[in-house]
Figure 1 (cartoon, protein in one colour):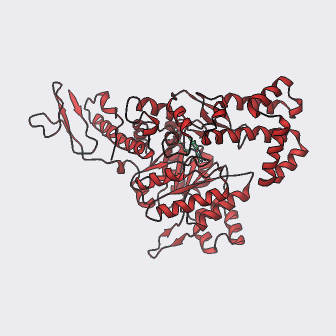
Figure 2 (tube, rainbow, N blue to C red; figure 1 turned 90 degrees about the horizontal axis):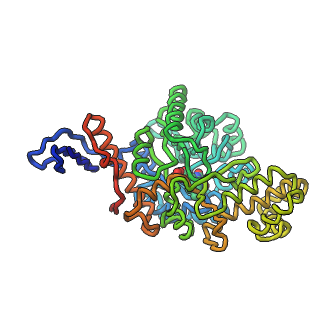
Amino acid sequence: MHVVVDPSGGSIGVAQGGTIAHSGDGGLPLLASLPPTYPEWLGDRSFGETHGVRFPYVAGAMANGIASTRLVIAMARGGCLGFFGSAGLSPGRVEASIVELGRELGSQHAWGANLIHSPNEPALEDAVVDLYLRHGVRKVSAAAYMALTPAIVRFAYKGVRRGPDGRIERAHHVFAKISRPETARHFLEPAPSKILEGLVASGGLTAAEAELARGLPVAEDITVESDSGGHTDNRPLAALFPTIARLRDDIAAQRGYARPIRVGAAGGMGTPASVAAAFGLGAAYVVTGSVNQGAVESGLDPEGKVMLAQAGIADVTMAPAADMFEQGVEVQVLSRGTMFAARARKLYELYRAAPSWESIAPADQQRVERDLLRQSFGDAWASTEAFWAERDPEQNRQAHADPKHKMALVFRSYLGRSSRWAIDGVGERRLDYQIWCGPAMGAFNAWAKGSVLEAPENRSAVQIAYNFLEGATAITRASQLRSFGVPVPAAAFDFRPRRIA
Ligand SMILES: Cc1cc2nc3c(=O)[nH]c(=O)nc-3n(C[C@H](O)[C@H](O)[C@H](O)COP(=O)(O)O)c2cc1C
């Protein structure tokens, strides 16, 4: 028996005796017929309607402009949604980028930018929200929020109003990226009264906006982040997604919200089958990251893209994060072709064990100065101090009072610069490249091997998206057919990469 699954719709031909068949191939027994299905229908239909995008597909934010304006523009023009990677960039660079996006995409295309929680720099978070409101950024992807801040609450509810038909309309949309139920809860509930009252008092929200906010969740799009590149709790999607969807259902029922809250899936999307699986779990939309970093539109240097294209599924590891180094927070990075992870781990071990740089064993000091800092600790401190003098002088005051903090700032400067070296292509620092990456990259490389998407220069984020979406549609149809009792062969679940117009 041979089964032919046509991804775009129509009947499915099933021939006996090994003959390939299409419906309408006269004389072959037609065993099953399915109505058409389309990539546009894989997710929640309200996703496209609310956000003005054709496909339920999002290119996630990638820090330091790796999710570049070029990437966001390409995704938007291709009918998908992209978030600019503003984390780690100066307010000036963020402003120039969102002005460019507004000019290139206007209001016809959907796009957004990242809003990253900065517990150590609340003023920065507020400044970024000011920029977004001033330049008409309508969607943000909110990340790293352990708790809500006035800045994100202000963005979420600014401009909320009751429309002529009595329904509440939002001017802004928060996509909340979460990997734990307790953080998801903050976004699924309305913002706490205390924050709303504070914002009314400071003029951040009007009394009318705050009143409407009391009956609205902070976010109506919740992105469940499973094992991914960058910050991750390494949870499998199949375990995490249903847990968050259940929580969403419980809170929505308790609160009696007028509109559904969508739950999307991120992490591990490296093949069409991964995307089909996410939609099979009920995802309203999918978010990709690692595979887009390897695409031509990303801000990573081409050398880094070649390294990514060589990664296998196990060529990733956890390493200390620059932003929350002292707390022991980790990020998932590429381990093949770079020593960053091992070196960063060594710095964390030294930091944990020693009260100051001076108390570290001389052999370790030498190794750090020679291989990592490539200068003396004293010289490294001088440039670190100059950096913080401009950015946040309080850090320098703390460092003078506490030698352990001084050591942390110097070690963090290595971690922070290592990702810039990979973006800028500083070849002499190749062994120190910090490239955030999840197992999705290796899965993608295995799938793309021998195809048009194998060479890094052929990998466009839009082609990847279209292949994932069309492939997920074909695989979904194969699953549908199988569930009708047809013996569908394994080949029907294998969608090969191709150029898609
Ligand atoms: C290089 C890189 C940088 C990232 N930076 C950010 C970021 O600044 N903010 C954010 O919310 N997510 C960030 N992410 C996560 C992505 O937006 C996305 O959720 C994730 O990569 C999806 O999982 P995947 O890597 O398995 O595809 C980053 C991911 C990568 C690979």
